[in-house]
Image 1 (cartoon, one colour):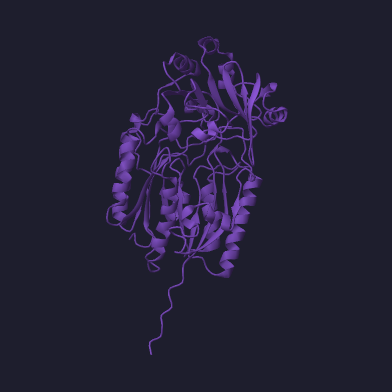
Image 2 (cartoon, helix red, strand yellow):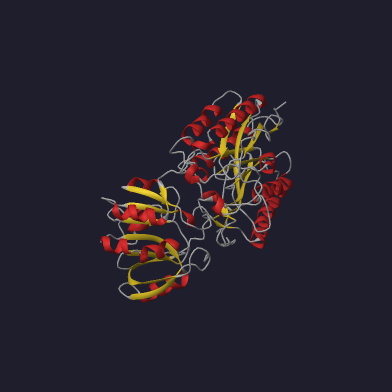
Length: 504
């Protein structure tokens, strides 16, 4: 009689993390509530591949712990971070008490900052490792604008990152991190951990200069899948890093992960040297200028919409969002008023003003004092007089449109980006027929890029100022390109190989 074989047990994999991009040059703070933590099943349901019927749903026993995520902003207060970290660790302790964990997916961005703490992600990874033990594999899929400190690189077993900016592959990357983990867990113990070649490269550049839409990033990032395809290599990545935080870890990093340690080291060094050799080629993704120069171009443009990127206060890069510098200039522009053209301005977050305008309702004339509640450094609050033409409440926000003689001003209760055509049309605004559209963003997200007849990036002030030298970095490694003379720098001098199980 043949004894039926029992199918192998599914691996137990926990999912947790804190994901944020945070400017230390912004006075804004990102609280635990703003990070909107998900717990339990909600953590898994945030991604298609873990939902019932998803591509990875049946390949493991997935355990949602806590995942906190927000659009970019300021640093997390120490107490808020401590609460989130403690809940993650407590959830992992409870999971391990039931049965050992085989893996952890650490869902992080890579550029979170905490008041009084350097390297939030490295600190969290070390704490997670202490709970789950040395045999548990940890995998992470990160933003290429994140930072990989030596601590993070040494603690997390499998690291991968986005390969496009704008990040059209962000969901693919998160799934790849989970799939890589499962594939390694299918190997026998003692063969699961790959070698990791980590090369920090002293480059600090904003995303608006490193978009994969243009060279040299296009061809540099095209090298990543070629390296990944080599026999003995599992993954490769270029983290261009986050320039608006002043921490020792902030710089570019190249990593190659695989079972062939020698090949991983060789390819990581070669890619890092190529990145370094082409550093002077990086330039802004669009024509740039002062706000006055950009506005003059927009007014003179023969067709619209002319999109202006108000880059210094970009909320999706870490700006406070309520800097009034650009709005004040638009409202005061005699050139714009005389042209007969109209502009849409999206947006200025100001909770009291948004609620007051919503209360009086559509059709009412209002006089509002807007902005500079969080970041008043570049300009003071601005006075706006006009008619309320839209009020759109949502679950966690209120958006209103105040129509002035030349500008439709979008005022919100909460800070939010305007990246999609539907972000405007739901407010009764048509960005396609507008003369000028001003958005707080850096490089244009795909829909805005496609609808723009022309566009420019205004070098405006704020917590994510594109002029890095105006911010005053004091704690990043020096020398650093483009802040210093780097003529004598060896870009691979600080490379480290973490051998793993098979690295020799």
